[in-house]
Image 1 (tube, helix red, strand yellow):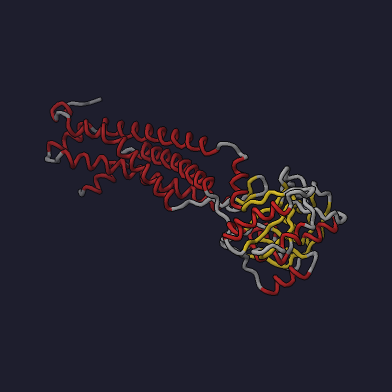
Image 2: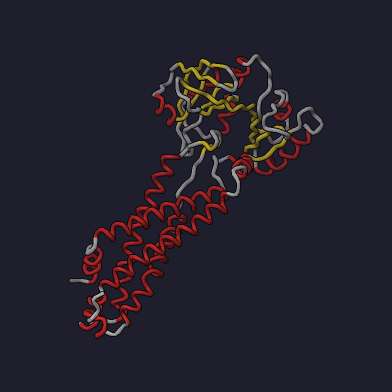
Length: 379
């Protein structure tokens, strides 16, 4: 029997304990991977490719205060501005569903310059030309069974209006496929033309232009009835996440507790396994196995358990993030947490570290003890 076969044989001598230990490691690493990926997301939430060039112009005092529509033309005249769109988040309800369907009322031509949406040219043109047209991401269309040309009614309990829309485009994207966009003019008309968008999105030509425009826009409206606060969308997302509290500290604390708990689980399991085999390990040493070889066999068993559990935990975390891709925090900001290679490496590194820490002490004792005493061990 080869050494790998001996390791496998020992792993399956108590299948229930091995399975439960692997499952415990998998659950712990699953939680650890989720927390680590979430912390990374909180540090630098990903966005679309041009996110650093997109500026959000909102009211300085309160997000609930609308802006005058006349600001759009004044912003568009500033050098370095590629496009400007008024923006209102529309809390849509479709059919009898109580779940909110996030939608945005915007300028159709401008919004197509902001997002990298893959959509046929004829669908783009139809969306721009028809006031009641809307476009939607592939995932949303699949969820509701919508097809191009379908008539859809969206109601809003906050705006107290129902909009009759026609689906003119379904887009696909590598980044997200959960947005729904329709004409801001149509919403404005349905509300009686108050001409009060909630905010503006501004696409800058270059990063230097974005930094300059943030100051120029706020200076332009400094003494107006409604003053503005301009920031990049990336900063807005960080501020939005900051409203949720010090989640990073909480996640770090839980992660530390998870690592400590799984260390205790694996250490207890390996200690039990080695203690039960004290006499067997003494026989191996009596047959000529060196101390290093015995240590290697025991460490290999622990590594096999930890790495298998870690792989299962990482796979579970990846599946969870895949299912949650595009879920909107607070019904507003889409979440795209990804399980990066660094996160997987961290999880596997923790598993290997736990394996070594949990095995070295009991394995060292078993491999260095008195052979005669170990052969008489019956506990």
